[in-house]
Image (cartoon, rainbow over all chains, first blue to last red; front, side, top):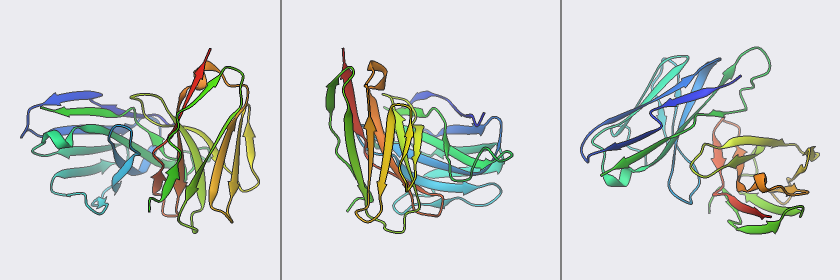
Length: 120
Length: 109
């Protein structure tokens, strides 16, 4: 249980295009979803936190107009990288926490498999 | 100063060896601590939570020292499959996780 999926798993696009990444909780209701970015040999950096039905909270230094986050339902959040540039190439990972009975705690984040974005 | 700091390694050990490494965290108000494992080009996966009294999960032992603000992970009887990057993760109480950059462990035959 507590499975999170991401789509697509990898994407290559031209500079200037927009890319949408989906994050889904498959068997639980994700009250909160988190979007991270990881550059090679670096730690995961939190970009934003989103709660269902409300605006995302962005971390300092993350441009909200460039990284659009929508959390329209308890099982789906999307991240859109607008006008992507080569420096946006990275590994984007979402995670989710929530409750399903008592075995999924709000303290534990379950991660999606990640999306590798390459901008040419 | 980074919120979570780890020795990047790599730690190269033979099969069957014991390997241990630490991480330090800067926020004394941190409430929850975890070790995650990340394989190359994959997402992090929860290895174990770290409790104040220390805890074991099979060959893995985690310790927390709140006074010195460090967490340790010890792996006994290393297996080839233990080769991975181990991420020290700290929750500062607002459900946000702070990740260390990871410690790379390579177990050789």
